[in-house]
Structure formats: structure tokens, C-alpha cells
Image (cartoon, rainbow, N blue to C red; front, side):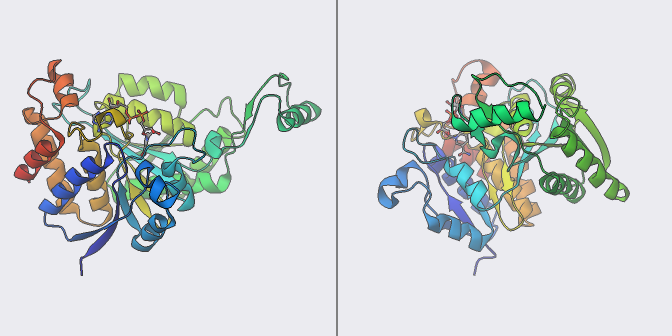
Length: 363
Ligand code: NAD
């Protein structure tokens, strides 16, 4: 029996070719993984009548660990995003987005090593919204006025921003536990508590309480206002270590951090819950590149590096990371996006699988 069984969701668009490259590289390390393939996404809608068949969730619940390719969100079919559904169904409350420099990839900086820990379940993403002109919006506007909370213009649409003690506590504890387990030194809570006193203010209060409980861990704690964080991330990206944020700021700063290290093609990610963890690149299914053997599989492969660390396979993870650094550092056998960032032209780039071959050669 294989040492690890992992649910593999190839996804759609560029997903299948990226996951093929990823499994080839992981297998070349000799690590003992059996992939349990679970199909989800646009390509299985016809077969199962849904882009997220129940057996996909069952497989993840059973194996506890999954890695996926990106999945297209079908527009106008009434189906909600498969990616969001997986996170909700399995209560994957922590979105982990490490951003570290890979010198030679054409990024603006080469000394970044930070980790964004984003709360994945509440905040403005809770989906509690009232359409402009609806009965719900009208009642809420009346209620706010009657409570003396403030005047909302009658022609407003409204989205609520709930932030709870329990979920703030759970995400900040996760950030501290992650920092301890991964040899990190500092956790920064990011917020706008000076303006949003009852939502971000509560998040900050809980973050400070949790930090006090971890004071003997040796992990430093600080808090920072979100707008100032954005400026300092661009000015001094090397300052930051682990950042913990409510959902919306986490979403925005994850992409900012991805931009600092050279773009979505190399930004890995993970969604982690109490029972299960699902690893996936930050980017989407890039349909215009699907089936062309062009897309950069680095983000998918680095997501596998996070997965291998999660599985305790630290040696295999380290070898893959070094291979990625080596091949991108050399700059010869890289995909079109990196070639273009470095030289301004795609001439001399290689395809998805040839890049994976170069990594395997380096292991
Ligand atoms: P996208 O990330 O798919 O593509 C944006 C652009 O980024 C592409 O045109 C391409 O130029 C570049 N790009 C992305 N990944 C790349 C790679 N690996 N190598 C080289 N270049 C790459 O974003 P989009 O076009 O907004 O979304 C397409 C679909 O993906 C949508 O249906 C969206 O909902 C979905 N999506 C899925 C996930 C997920 O599965 N977790 C995440 C984001 C978006």
C-alpha cells in the first residue's frame, strides 16, 4: 500500500496539463503517493449534471489531502464556483499563500519570503447581500435609521461584513501555529480597525488576545493598518514574515504578493481546515492556453511542495524547490511567461512538459 493516498483533481482548462507535469515531478522524487483521481469542473458537467460530483468531496474527506488544478467557474449556468464550494463544504478556513522570490524569474524583487494567512469563511465574502431596491435593502435601511446607526441612501445595494470572535481566533491561532511549525519569527495582523471598529476592531482585539497566549512561543506580534501594509509591502517587501488577515484584505494582498514575486504563474496556495487540506495554484484555468502545452506549471508544482511538507515529506519538498530555483535561475528551459518577463520576448521558451523534464533532470 502506498504511504500516502492523495485526491487529485485535474480540473479543466490548463489544469490537466499542469497536474500531469506536477505528478511527474513529484513521482520522480521517489515519494510513495497513490493519486486518487476525482473529476470536477466544466468537463464533467454533462456526465454528472454538476461540476462538483459528491464523490469528489467524499474522496477528499477520506484521504484528508487533495491537490487540484484550476477549475473554470461556468458563467450563466446557475452553478456556483467549484473552488468556493469545496472550501465551504469542507470548512477549509485558512487560505495559505506563501510568496517567496525565485531569483531569475524577472520579478521586481528577489528577497521576498512571506506568507499570507487569509481567513476564508466570513467578512464581505459571507455572501449576505441586499440588492438595490429590494424589500430586504429597504428594511435594513429603515432599521439602521431607527437604531441611529446612520443614514443609508435609499438607492443603495448593501453587502454585510460579519467578523466573529470564534473565526478570528481560529485563523490567528492557525497563523501562530504555522509560524511555530515553520520556523517563522513574526506574525502581523492586518486590519482597518481605526475605521471599522466593530468588525476589524474585533478581529484586532482577538488577535491581540491570541498573541498574548502565544507570548512564550518566541513569535513576535505586531498589527498594521491594511493601506499602510500595501505601501510598505511595495517599498520593503523583505520586512514581512507571516501576515494574518480577514477575508477581503487577504484576497487582495495575496495577489499583491504574487505580483511582487513575479506573477500568478509561480504563486502556490493551500486551503486548510481542521480535517482536510486542499492544495492549488493561485491562478485560474486560463482557457486560452488550454491544451497548448504552454502554461507555466510552477505554481501547481510549488503547491505540491506545500503538500509534501504537510505530509511530512520535507526532503522531497526541498529537492523540488531547489530544482525550480535551479532551472528558473539558469533561465534556459522556462515557459513563455518567464522568458518574456526576463528577456522581453518569448523566443527560446519551452513547453509545460519540457520544463517539467528539466526539473526532473535537476532533482
Ligand atoms: P487566470 O488566472 O485563469 O488567467 C489570467 C491570465 O493569467 C491568463 O490569460 C494567462 O495570461 C495568465 N496565467 C494564468 N495562469 C498561468 C500559468 N500557469 N502560466 C502562464 N500564464 C498564466 O484568470 P481568469 O482568466 O480570470 O480566470 C479563468 C477561469 O479560472 C475563470 O472561470 C475563473 O473563475 C477560474 N479561476 C479558478 C481558480 C481556481 O481554480 N482556484 C482561481 C481563479 C480563477
